[in-house]
Image 1 (tube, helix red, strand yellow):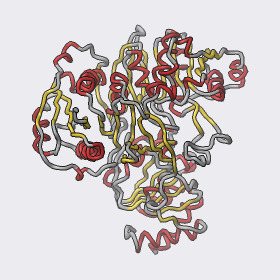
Image 2 (image 1 turned 135 degrees about the vertical axis):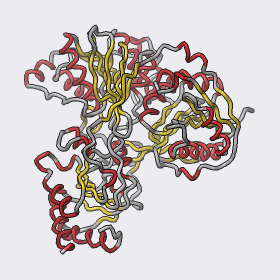
Image 3 (image 1 turned 90 degrees about the horizontal axis):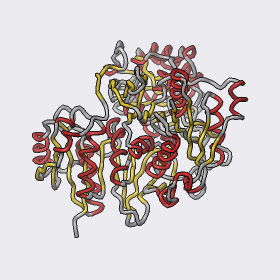
Image 4 (image 1 turned 90 degrees about the vertical axis):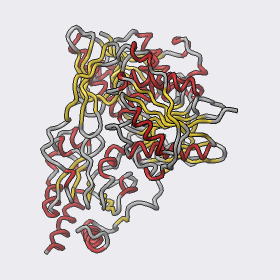
Length: 264
Length: 332
């Protein structure tokens, strides 16, 4: 069974963020990068399935050269090989241009199932996986909290999150795109052995020509939606910050809660 | 020249015009005024014609387009995409708005792929700026806001999901429109894309936080199951219930029935203390109705501070014990 996992390398959102002078994005120079959180869970789901079925995980990413780091981490936890779409033509796309390029790469590798995260921690449109499924014309499920391959290997049972603490239990035919939610499993850590083995596993860099795609349909060129600017939310509306050390701030807060907000 | 159209695709719940439906219609009306367009409402489901007629009698819209077919209930992405995409291709609305919900998020990007449309999800607001529409949405876990737009020269339809509460439901203008059926007969022969086996509660609901008056909520910042003591002490001092954001539950620090947010319980206490919670939308949606929100976080840029009434920037492991002591002293 060939299992595709699509991951994205994103800035570590725990890090201090600074907006660029021109407001176009955040300063990336000294930012730590990580594998997108829900993609880590997708990777674990894919590797666990590969172990169960004797299959292999092929991990895909669209991203600049630094994204190879994320691919190595994926290889270190058990992916067999990686496909990197690093050509500038693929980059800075929207869900449509990105999803369609990934679909072409996955189709070329003849995969039986795709796992990916439900949302990225940088732009968070939460749409690329669904566009990917639509392009492949495969069924999909979004915000999946449980996955199980059924006997026969042609269908799977999926638990999909609905609002208000309810889950829907579904049966979906393979091939399919499964977009998982963080918390579906417990991602394994890379062992030293895995990290060493990863250095020898292949990362293939493929370009638009390999996929038979017109560069105009890819990345920023092919995108319909573009980012104009980013900013920190207005600090006008928002919390009254109580200053001082912990005891002083705590006392001031209790005072406010009693006498101003009157909730205590 | 054909008039531009803004569509509001509803997610009917129990055959009634829900608050979020009103918000979506209001958003469509606001957008239509900005771009000189008319508004149509789209209602998909089974036995929804009566609801469509009700909306047509209540809302200031041009038409209520109704796709009434057995295959549309319960929802499946396959059927909803099959009903909506051809209608969009045929009638070419410039904008199609959806309520931002787990259901919309699952299927509307697929509709967009089918109609070569732009995808803009989780919209917090939109405005007219120098001849174009700018859409504002959260990025980087809600730490920043981004303005996005459709690229110049692109004539693609724009499909956008509007966050709950982004536009007030009572902004929906009253009026009337006409009901028109959408062509959905072809759904009868559509191959299903999934089989629904059942619906279940995510957790045994042992704790009902929806009625709590005071809640102390633990976030990722607490740091571990063994570090929950500071939360418990404060809750005891306040006579409060304990809740949590998603990462705390996923890490197994607290049981799932403590979860507050879009995947957990929705609460509206008079006092909500969020400790070590960054304030991602999925959490905010579950506690926005709180009368008074206090946020404690060591990151001064945490999005939670934008919606809180009071905040303390600091290490919760120092702040909470100080707060517990101050509460005990005040109570005497």
